[in-house]
Image (cartoon, rainbow, N blue to C red; front, side, top):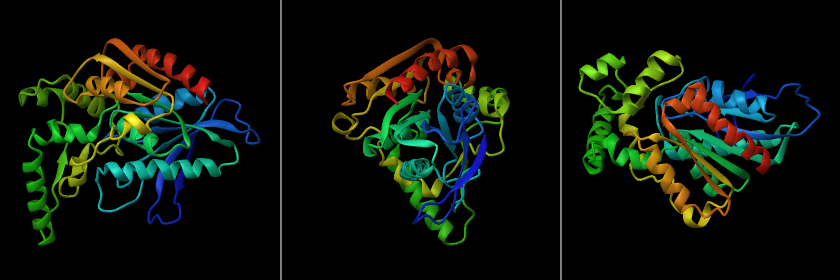
Length: 307
């Protein structure tokens, strides 16, 4: 694995990324490549890198795993922005970098994302036809989630609160940084949380895969654009690439099951596949060997065929 930084013309900060290469890597060859994108609040060291990135590299692909701008090892200020449109710009900048690497075939580039990274990857594929194949692992449309659960089903009230907070910060108040998760599963349960996604996210980020670069937080005053964003807009006409959607059938509050069904139905692609991991949840598909192995048994042949 190689750590790299990416700064394309017009950028004012670096994107930090890891590049995973296949066994027996030969820099004189040209390989198919995949951009592997981490969930909301995650980092390149977690599921997008150490699980899916590593497995796809083992299967013969060059895999690049970026940190989101404003988060992890990437630059950008203010910190802890969760900016859906910037995520799409990040992925396109990463593709620019891949196409300049002498060992990457610029005509054989795919994209994969997990959770919010899946929704962001879908949006990127809608607008960037350099992407030849797309896989979404328990993907979530962050705009839909923010308008619903993340705003308490009160998006207008949330926008008003963001406006008030930004006004206060402009007058010198401390920034408001929202923490997505409780400190532990027990603390969440004690607070009355019962949703499987929230509790399993807490177990993943606090216990199974803790990492200092994973933010699990968001600067509240700068998140308003996400409420008017939609990962699936124009999918009926513009999402034409081969696509695989992997979801678990134990639905939780983040809505990956629902979003997976929706984008599979809406996408214009003539070559689309819905894979349901029966008996498994959203966070099982992050790192649990059996459901991850099942997902990879579908995703790896898909990418080999399409790239």
